[in-house]
Image 1 (cartoon, rainbow, N blue to C red):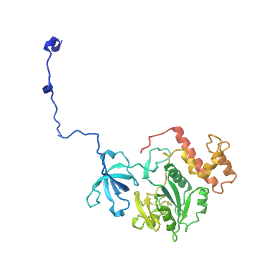
Image 2: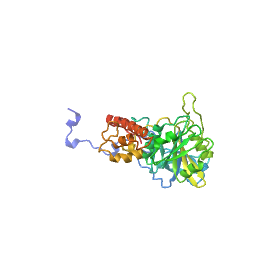
Image 3: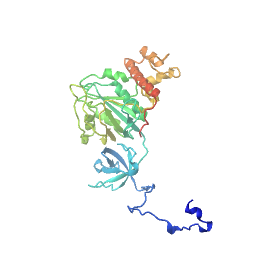
Image 4: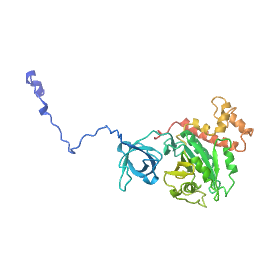
Length: 358
């Protein structure tokens, strides 16, 4: 029996607020709040590049690029990816004076997002660029040899992101690209060819005006050389191809947004590091066939639920290729499509491995 059991109702102890003991705050600071300021004075800036937690941004796109300023991300955005091409809300010192630093407090809604994954089974995304509306795929006619299947992957990724693809074939003075280009006959794909002595800068530049164009390509294909010719002040590092391995050396180590200024107007060139592979693990499987526009049109004649694989019965695409209706590049295009479809069929059957990152 405790001492409380011996108490009568009239003997119950009385307490008031003076009996409450409050532990003092040793840090003497105010408790944190989840409320954040509205930042009504924030200015919209274009993210030109990212380097070790520092963001180069241009507050007014009509101003010269040398007016770009440095910014850091706000604490509340620590889990939000900020990439080249983003339109960010910036507060703080936006003068660009030496030693100043502004702060990114928000990201405007993106119109597009180009992504890739490590491989076709990895559904974790690597964001490349935001708000691009064109993709310029750069390949070499030789040194290194062009890879049609890698270009197919770029086309699938572009379509999945809602971006218009373009194709540039460089080093045409070393080899005739006709056989390679036959792979893409029937596609609504604008193609430019470029040699050492003849670069169609006017034609390519005209396609860049009014657009935000991301340049992608295998290492060593001349992508940085083309960027420097279009934007002379870019001074992007250029490299060479290893004579033993036939592989290009990575020269561009970061993604940067550069202003293109031509006789017909201006645009944005987004240069990216060269890659030797381009995983599509994040892509919607339905967009694979749509990237092969000529095959997709024929697929409308296929039986319902057709897989378009070699053993698919009555597949209209397989029959069209066998009959030679798609020209000399038809068999290679069908083979490329079926390889992708087989890879994704295995992935979908195994189920997702990890959630995709934003």
